[in-house]
Length: 386
Ligand code: BEZ
Image (cartoon, rainbow, N blue to C red; front, side, top):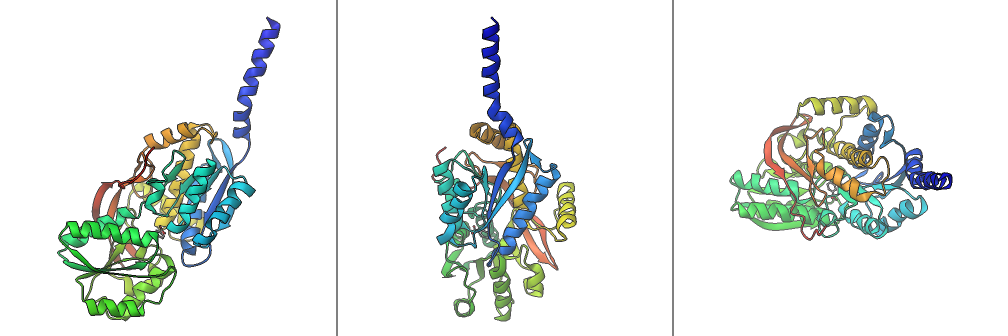
């Protein structure tokens, strides 16, 4: 009997050991973000937001202290596989958080799927991440490229515009954004008459602006973000187009960029899942805490980083810090309404946010929310089989 008791105790101890280890050891978070190039400011805001959430939880999620390892992905798809492998194979991270660029995230999702590593995407909107490459351990805390673009297509059609020219960087995010705008705009009776693009991260817009002037559309739809968005908005105004042809886009065009764009951005309409004047207790508290911690105003990227922290926190709380329990992690995230500064949202079965898309207008240094363009918008998640 004594012998049986000893064996039972030993067996129980052996079973409990991995959990005790998991709870005791630090959780390694691999941040793969752009810290240089046109999207550098976006990467910094995401990291700040993520760190703020962890700080608010006392530095621990699911009982585990968080340790960070960082890689600058430079928004360069050709280096993406090597960069993500540095985190997974060299640094043995428990979870990857990244990235901004849709061309880079595709490689990250492939490595996450091949190795079973948890991936939380805090920006890149590539449809494939929560579409054909969806997986129980891949989550997105941001948006799909389809979501704000589709909402803007509806807005532009409702404003009575009949023709539009589109202009974007030529890569997955731009192509998907333009595609979704066109889908909704043409459903609403409009017609996209010309699609212009230039290679990422180029900012030589002059020849393309001349083409827009010659086409004389009712409206222009554009996808640019970060440094390129600053330059495009300024060049559009300098070319004299702003007065005659209204410029629309997903809110990346004016989020985190207004200081640099100045008066050239005034009055622009954009659609996005965040804005500067939500004035809810949740957002006000977040904005205050962010400003205090980083001496900066938050933007949509900061919110997405913060919410990536929330997704990880929810999953780890449910699994008591054991990130290998992927099904329990996913079940917890799927059933929780995430209390985001943007407004509460849920995560779809494909693991993309189901969220309100706001219509905003630039007023001074703010993206002022003037209404909800699309309520509880769900990405179509084409090809996702989970
Ligand atoms: C993207 O590549 O998915 C992206 C980059 C910047 C802002 C929004 C989306």
